Length: 288
Image (cartoon, rainbow, N blue to C red; front, side, top):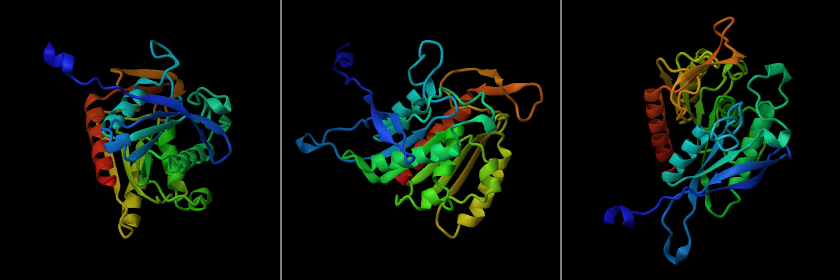
């Protein structure tokens, strides 16, 4: 009992901040402050930062006990990276533009596209590099699904907004189950090292285009010294790294592989554990 009473209490400090997108939209963002010991004199050293990009459903849970709060996956990732000694920024690309979710919208009807997501990611990068607590030379980008596609959009070396932003590239990039058909068709090349995390049985963003893209990138980027990693998890579906147990069908989103069915989403425990472990390793190596 005495040991328990004397044990330090871990507080996951987080707050909302205002971040300007490169397209001029003022975004709300969540900042998870790195857990770290105070330096001498009470001044904490600058720490690495991860810019984390939500999927088509936005940052927040839409139902249940967490309704209106960061959803379980974002909360868990934020706390995990925070405990590693990194700051984490989650920019909200939807609510400032009058949207709560894009998932059930057809691609052609969406008002928020990768154009906006790219501008938001780069705006977050610019904002981070102005903060006194951030090590601006060590900033990574990570995203899921629509946010995974935004990772690709924000690192596409050929895009004018990326190459012309005046910003040094992200230190590394991590994309969980992005849509890769468009980047593949447009000859995407990355301006940083990149890791893909894919579910082999994903019928929302099927893995085949990302596998082909990763294979092309490996051939192209060998000479540049930029690494490309491809992780495909057998038996895993979309959203395999969620902390919430179980797999369910989302009938509001038609499957791209199975006519007349919705997409399957949910946790694959082994893929979740393995992928998040690899995330920690990649960031540790990138931030050395």
